[in-house]
Image 1 (tube, rainbow, N blue to C red):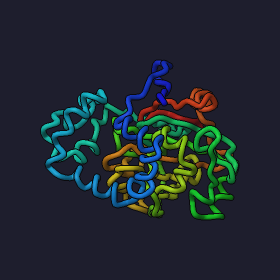
Image 2 (image 1 turned 90 degrees about the vertical axis):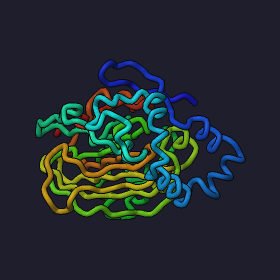
Image 3 (image 1 turned 90 degrees about the horizontal axis):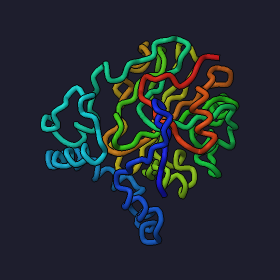
Image 4 (image 1 turned 180 degrees about the vertical axis):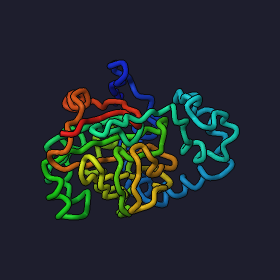
Length: 297
């Protein structure tokens, strides 16, 4: 299964370079792979062990091949020389130069909280939110909260999937006040489309962190980070109950592709038309952190 996305700046359809694609296809498409997935790979111990290795000095030797294979532009990074990183996770969670990700500061524009591939849905039904075509989950399952599910019924859901090649820090899409993240324990399935097609309710099964964000211009937003296979940790770097500016860092993922999901209440946001049209066709739109993804209604 090849994965394609739309490069927003050019409108071109691009084939995604998938890190570890052979392993993913084997683990999700074969009987033996499925058995190992269920007994080991989806569980915390596998991702914890793998994640801890990325914190060791021995993991440094992976950086050069990773940069070359995934065509990562190191000129955007604060530290361009890969030899200066202490280990792979230090490189993976690298900070970028401010000018590499300009923030759309128009107050009526919601910006992408992360680099990634976006799917967006308006007027979502609390009992049938789309994971991928033909696969659904409920808001109550995602939030572990029946009242919250009702609040976001008919609202907007924006899913930003981060690939291993992407910048892995996430930021606030508006100014406002974030509250303390609620951590929900779970599994560590991949969030790659290969896995999303085969495993039901991945976002509800995986480990995740859910933050209520009282934004200044779009009302209450749920800002959720979803863990995945080989994600060592979801690190929050913000201070709860302290007002933040749009584009300010919220946190970062250690090694592994993962996902940020935003939920907005009904009547707050009109998602940009190109993102909606691509979503309706079942294809993601590649955006950068700080780009506009919708307008205030």
